[in-house]
Structure formats: C-alpha cells, structure tokens
Amino acid sequence: MKSLAELAAIREKMKDKVVLREGSGDIRVVVGMATCGIAAGARPVLNAFVEGVSNAGLADKVMVSQTGCIGVCQFEPVVEIYEAGKDKVTYIKMTPEKAAEVIEKHLKGGAPISEYTITNAIS
Amino acid sequence: MKELSLNILDIAQNSVKARAKNILIKLTETDETLTLLIEDDGCGMSREMVENVVNPFCTTRTTRNVGLGIPLLKLAAEQTGGTVSIESVSESDNPDACGTKVTAVFFKNHLDFTPLGDIVSTVTALIQGSPDIEWRFEHQLTVGSVELDTKELREILGDVPLDTYEVIKWIEDYLKEGYASVS
Image (cartoon, rainbow over all chains, first blue to last red; front, top):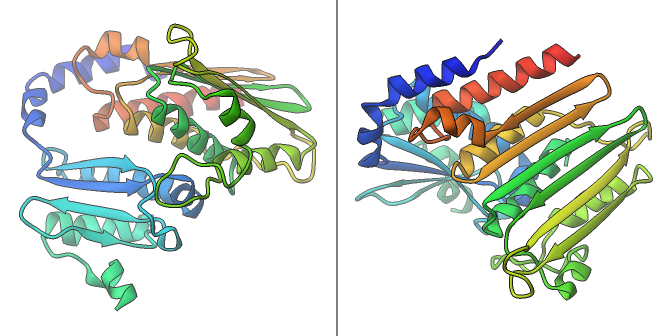
C-alpha cells in the first residue's frame, strides 16, 4: 500500500531541487483543457506529456501546464510549445503517441515536427 | 463525452476558473444511482447566470459564444432519467459564503448511462493543473470508499509543489491502489 512515508521521502529528495525549479521552465508545454479539448482526448495527451517529460529527464527544463480554449476547437487536442527566443509551435490533433514523439524530437532534440503543426494543416 | 470522468474534469475546471481555494468532488453510489457533487468556494454566480448556465449559448469564454460544459453534463444525467441541479452564492451577494454546488444524479442501470471511466486520471489532471488549490476527492462505493485530501499531502510535503511529477505519480498509484482494494 502507498504510504504517506513515501511522500516524506519525496520531500527529502526534492529539498535541493526546489530551488532549481524556481529558475526553470525554459520551455513551456501548454495543453488546451477546455470542454472542446477534453472531449477530443486532451486528458491522455496531458498525462503523456507529464509522464514523458519526467521520464526523459527534462523536468527541470520543461514545464507542462494547462489552459482553456485556444479557439481552434476543430483541431483539438491542441498543444502549444513556447520557448524563449523562438516562435510558438502549435501542434494539433494530438495523441499520446504523437506526444511521445514531440518529447523525443522537439523537446529533447530541438527540432519541431512540422507535420503535426497547425501551419502544416492550414497551408 | 465518452466517460463521466471527462465531464467531471470539465465541470471542475469551472470551479478553478471561479478562483476557488477549496474544491470537493464527491461521488456517492448506491446499487441504482451515482450522485456527483462538485462544490467550490469560488466567486459563485448571480441568480440569472445560474438559470442560464444550462443554455449552450451561455458561456464565460471569450473565444466562442458557445459553452457546452453544463449542457453536456445535463444531457449525460437526463438521458439516464437523472437530474442536474446548481446552487450558487455570488461573491457580490455574500463574499464570506460564496461558491457553487453542482449536483448530478445518474441512474447506473439505464442503457444510456455513461461509464465513469478513468476517474484517477481526472483527479491527477486537476491537481497537476491547479496545484495550489485544496482538492478533496471522495468516492463512496457500495463496498467501501476511496478518498484523497491534498491538505493532508501538503502537511507532509511542505514546500514541495503538488505538481511535482513524483507527487502526481504517488497520487495516481495511491488512488489506483485504493480502487483495487474496494473492488
């Protein structure tokens, strides 16, 4: 059974890290979680990013957050990636599988996957 | 929505947007019914707004003039013969006791009952998205209960934010184990 003692252990482990997190978030992954996004499957996409970013060892560099309706409901689930000094990248019709690919190639490798972006869909 | 847990995720976001500090999500089951209660201490709504929220053309969103959260919940409840009721006290009427209470009753044995689905994922998504809110989750099943209170976790975690991956993972495993022990 999961115990509260495990939480105390997490606290111990995080002691030094908390300070680090303050200055983190070079990259922000924002998942649209309004009615339109949720109905289209945003919840598993969010979970894939939360878990995948941590497993890829990117937790100090990448922040995963949620937002409301971005305004392009027909393209949900929509995920926006903000990085200082770079143009925003908007991924559309996301799935947990595509999320894994974005983590690997874009967040880790620095190369956006243009095939999954909104620019690709409307041009 | 394919799962009731997705409606719950959606409706609870309204409480987040209402700047609630405490949000309770309570599920109570009998052999025939599932009752959902979402209660918050957010800014509440005026009487006109409460009467109007079941209308799909009533919304607070600014990107579109359509809001489907409450209408979709109402549909999911009413198609099983159930009901949705909303009570709210607005901040301007009573700043000390404001908040909103959404109650939905579903008849589980009805053909059109939408299964609850992955409620654990809903709870972790809500906490991950708003780690500063005090969340209380209670699910009373006919054979036992599953509960989580972020206040208790915070007492142990101190300054560690609830959206730390290790904490979210712990919550996920804790709830999954809770469900395994009552099924």
